[in-house]
Structures are given as C-alpha cells and as structure tokens.
Image: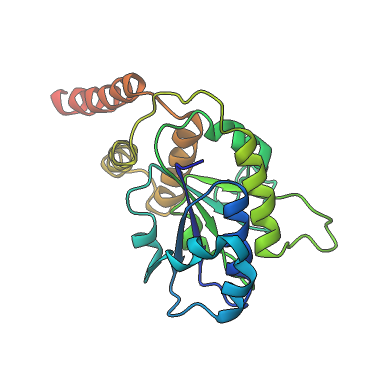
Length: 232
C-alpha cells in the first residue's frame, strides 16, 4: 500500500485528522497530505496514537492541484452519489469494486477525503479519475470522515497482494484526454457539452486502466482521424 497517498481536504473538526493518521498506521500507509490547513490541533496528535509520526511528517499544501502532483490516478470520495447514467461526476464505485480495480494500477494513487461538512466540491471531483461511495442507510448516509477512511483503507489493504498491471502515466492520460477535447472543438461539438463529455471520456479511460500499447493505438487513431480530415 506504499503507492497510496492520503489527501485530506480542509479538515475542520479537531481529532479527525489524528484518527486518520492512526488508521494509516494500522494499514501500513505513510504518506499523508493536508490541503489548506495552517496548523494541526493538539487533539489530533493525541488521537493519532502510534500514527503520531505520520501526522508530524504530513505535507501541508495550499491547493488540491499541488496535493495531487506526481500521482497517476486520483480518487474522490463522497457521501452523495448518483444512480443516473447521465450524471458522470458522481457515477460511483463501491469500495470493494475500486480496491479490485486499483490492484491493476501501476503508479501512485491519491485518495481524497473531503471536508466534514460539504465534502468535495464538484470542481474537485472533476479533477478525479474515479469516484468512490460507501453505501449506508439512506436516512443517514453521511459517514464521519475517519469512519469512511477505515472502510476504504481496509478494502485497499485486502487487495495489496494482487499483481500490478502495466498502465500509462497520468501525463499520458492527460495528453490523451486533451487530444480528445481538441478533436471535439475542431469537430464543432456543442460547446456546452464539451466539459461533461471530456469528463466522461476521462472516467472511461481511467476505469479501463489502459496499457502503453493501448495508449499508442488510441493516440494514433485520434491523430490519424484528424490527418484524414485535413487531407480532404
């Protein structure tokens, strides 16, 4: 599980960050990044127990963009989901499904845990390759952030021995997504639909965890299509 970076976005309630650090120690995780927090309350250090060294060494950054730098895949979490096939942003995996999928990823994964009150914003979720939701009682479906972390860490820990595949880097994924978006623009695709369609393509490509060979084929196909249009 050393290829997993835990990213906590703007923690608000003292103690939750410490509980997450303790859980990280339980499941062999070491890399903790905290977004937009100036100091760690003493209650967090108290609750971290043997995860104290993780908490004291955590990286503190000013933005989510900085927090996800160097990652191959970014995973968002939220208590709010959507069952609609048209709702791309919150189309979700359950923890066990994602754990099985992540076992095929070669490279570092970032797991985003949102604010206790509003979770992750839509713009933050749009930066994610996957979205994970924990099913709970519909009368009260929102879990405490550290409780959610425990479930996610447990599922990820159980899949750690699976064989890793040969997948492309995030830079290559971004290049493929950008080429797709450029083609939409050049083909006069409806402007108001470009953002959602591009996000849908990113989620599909991320879910497929394509290999370098598949990446070259897709890039070549997109490029040859454009060249064919130009030669007409």
